[in-house]
Amino acid sequence: MSLFIAVLASLFSVVNPIGALPVYTSMTDSYTTKERNRTALHTSLYFTMICLVFFLGGSFILSFFGISVPALRLAGGLVILNSGYSLLNGKVIRSEAINDKVKAEAKTKEDISFSPLAMPLLSGPGSISLLISLYAIHDSWDKRGIIIGVLFTLGLIIYIMLLSAPYIARLLGEAGMKAVTRIMGFIVMAIACEYIVSGAMNLINKH
Image 1 (cartoon, one colour):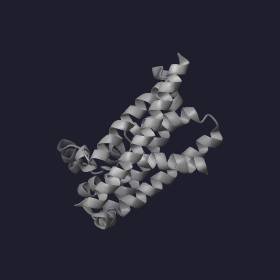
Image 2 (cartoon, rainbow, N blue to C red):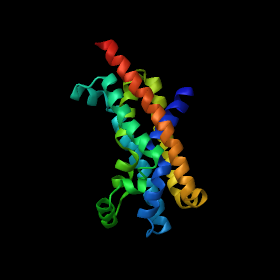
Image 3 (cartoon, rainbow, N blue to C red):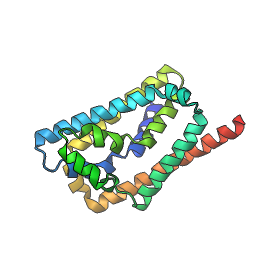
Image 4 (tube, helix red, strand yellow):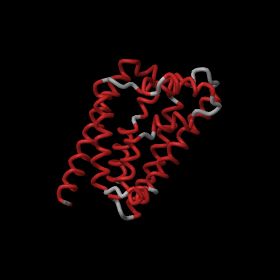
């Protein structure tokens, strides 16, 4: 149970679905309720599938590119640290993270749930590197099964949040969204520091 909660908290912080809500609402503002609900469902399903692919294919990816787990944790930690720093300082807001060209292309798509919503908005480099390292660290399928359960749970949480996006946006307001985003940024930076220190120490001990 402790592993489930720890992984869920880490992934939720790195994925930061709260920060994705402004993008989702702005890109689906012309949708009907039925279309918006369908997009929310597809986005959460695609997100879960993408995470499962990278989690289960983690060992193959590492061996194919000849990357060690400590190196991945160090590099992934730096990526996550950069994201967390940007969130903490309010320099990057998710609605600005996708440029105008991508938004314009998305407007012409029949389905925006896979791209750009599920990837790269929700499942970006930080969450992918975290998942690959989790697979390598937890070598028993009992623990991996728990992490797979976390992915399905997080997918369900994202689905509920996207369905409730207009209400959450009104409830928190712009100031509330910024405050929550900065809190998430601090948590993400703490997770990143843990990964960087762990990866660096393992690399030093290895050599």
